[in-house]
Length: 224
Image 1 (tube, rainbow, N blue to C red):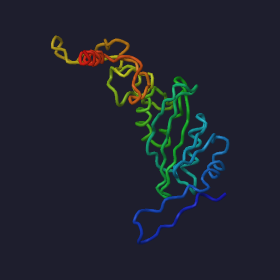
Image 2 (image 1 turned 45 degrees about the vertical axis):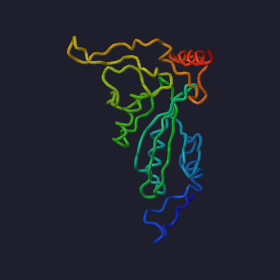
Image 3 (image 1 turned 180 degrees about the vertical axis):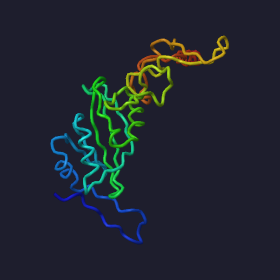
Image 4 (image 1 turned 90 degrees about the vertical axis):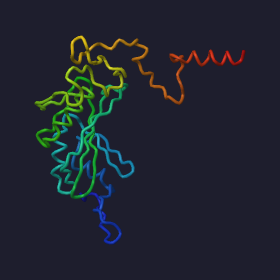
C-alpha cells in the first residue's frame, strides 16, 4: 500500500518545506490502523481520525513508527465538550510529522467517568497536556501518575471548560482585612446570574435583564 503523495519542493518559488498531500491518506490510515480506526475526516487538507479509546496507545505507536507517516511529535492535547452526547468529551491529539510536514488529529471519546489511556510512556510531554485536560474537563488519564491541577488554583472546584460549569464558578477569593490574607468564599450570586442560556447575544434573550427596565421607563417618559 503506497503512502500519501508527497509534493516535491519547487526551488525559487518558496523556501519552506514541501507539505505532504492528503491524497490517499484515508485509505492508508485504514490499512495501518485496521479496526482501531472508527472514522476519518478530511477538511481543507486537514485530516482527523476517530479511533477506539481502549486502543489509543496501540494507534499512536503505529502512527509514530510508520515508515511513511513518521508522526513522531505530539504537539498538543485538548478537549471538546458535547453535553448531549452519551460520551460527551472528545479528546483531541495533534500530531506532527517533521519529515513529511504533515499534521494529523487523532480523536477519542469518553464520558465523565471512563478514563483515557495515558500517552506519557510514548511522549513524556503528554503528562502536562493530560493534566490540563483533567483540570479543565475532568477527564482522567489511566497511567498518568501525576494527575494534579495545573491551570486553576489549589482550592478550585469543578472543571471550568465543561459547558454546564456556571460562568461565575463555585467559589470566589478576595483579600480579607480581618484575616490579613486571601480567603475563599462560596459565590453568593443568585442562580439566575449563574446560568447560561446558550442563546446568541445577537438574538437577544426572552427575559428582561437587570437594568433594562430603566430603558423602558425612559421611553415611556419621552412619549408622555
